Image 1 (cartoon, helix red, strand yellow):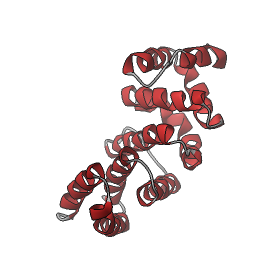
Image 2 (spheres, helix red, strand yellow; image 1 turned 60 degrees about the horizontal axis):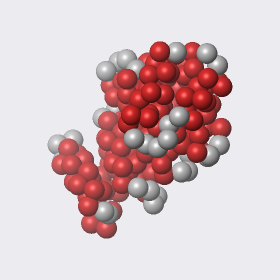
Image 3 (tube, one colour; image 1 turned 30 degrees about the horizontal axis):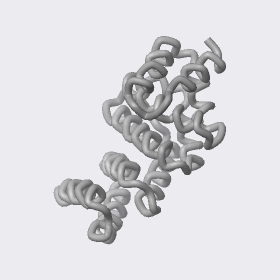
Image 4 (cartoon, helix red, strand yellow; image 1 turned 60 degrees about the vertical axis):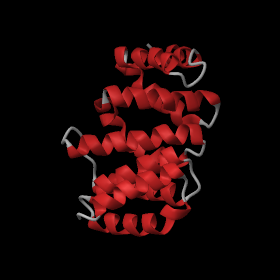
Length: 184
């Protein structure tokens, strides 16, 4: 399988409905050699193919996070290049999958990789992004904060400052994280 085969699968993703994403996801899971091509499509540019590729990448990582293991540097070094909100939400969720896999000892991250994830996720919380991106970022930062206490302190300050002015979804997730932080 090659990049053109994968691109043809991605082109069949008409919209974000799960049925369309599942077919392309199953294609990548069945043909893991296409995973690197999928990452290339995600970060090549900000066109519709890149956005649809992030939707597929999210599901691939949900089903098998270990496929990203040889591509962690590439993924982490490029997450801050994503600007489209439709692509940013799945990217933030993949960061959460990665951190959860690290906590379960399924993946290993270097200190530098963790710092880049922390930086990007803090940027997503303090910038004007959709609530889903921010909610995944809060969860990611909370988990990384269990290792880096300063992250929990910064996260708490930001959430306390922004909770009342955030949307209902932002407030809900922020209050949940703040409750967890009360015990740390």
